Amino acid sequence: MEAPAAKRPRVTAPPAALPSFERIRQCGRGTQARIMLARRPSDRLGSLAQQPLFAIKAYRGADVRRSAADVAQLCTERAALIALAAHPFAVTLRAAWWDPAARSGEGEACLACDYAKGGDLLEQLQKCPRGRGLELPRARLYAAQLLLVLGELHAQGFLYRDLKPENVLLDEAGHVQLCDFGCAHEGLQAEEFVGTPSYCAPEVLRAQSGPEAYGAAADAWSFGILLYEMLVGRVPYLGEEAPQVLARQGKSDGPPAHRALADAPDAVELLGGLLCKSATERTTLAQAQQHAFFGSLDFGEVRARRVAAPFKPRVRRGSGALASAAALLAAAGGSSGSEESESESESEGEGAEPPVAGAILQEFLYVQ
Image 1: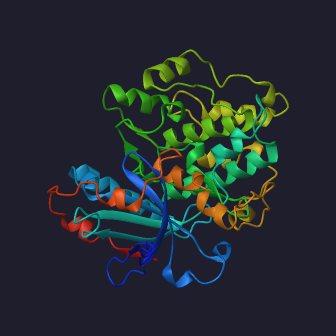
Image 2: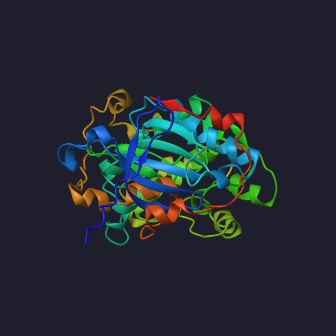
Image 3: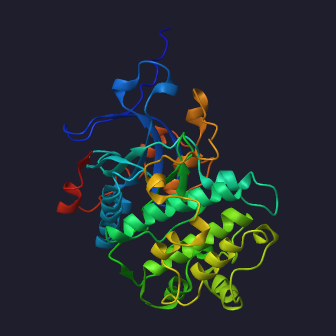
């Protein structure tokens, strides 16, 4: 009996101007997208450890085209990534495309970024001893790099709105790579609730009860929450629901004291300014760069990546690289253990009659 033919890897070949990507495996799934580890077919020669790898965030056509707002948000995510294309501390978007023939004709919108092999910040925080965060020099450098990339995003006219450890990746050298711009907003003022409650500013949490305008100060608050977590090992106002977090914020006169901050008075002062409940009185990201907490750093040297990272992540090689889902899942907002076969995922929505893709999706193509 003739042996069955080996299953060939799927090659995504969008318009001819776009290089093809070979999808190696699905690593995770979020509420709206699945994440695929991929490489270019031309890079198959040689060991996997030496090949450039990519994370493809793939949205189902039916999910993208449910409303004009969904299409607009996808385009905003793409635009924010393009705006940061040359930034050293953001994931690099290599290609974006709309493939109307994918998923049995349902269509698929894809964003292909460089794969960050160092995992994410959440993984690093989970390794810290209970009641402790990262070492001060390490937290300071990560914070400085995040200040630079968030500041540039604001300068380009976007709000980030979802800063949390899962969305902070590390590259092989140990430098920050901000990812997942799915909650980004074009314009420096928004009014809808979005994000993860424990990291949201009071004005954003209040927006869940009705429209309330907020701006770049909301990202400054989230930055303060993340800095606190990096130093202490936990967020100051924990909660799964917006009202719960808002109530805890209201009972506090400032970030909770912690023994991890006892010998870091500059950090305590900076956190007090960043976590000011009044958005108009809150320390801005630009002001934070000038704070004494960062006095030992030259931001020009930091941006040029000439400040060596105190920690270099252990990069998974060979087959281990394929099993590393942490960095990819951060971009999908999902969790590990959600792998499914390509054939199963491709059959989703089969037989459906999704609405016709608009001109916006037809112009989604981008190649760096």
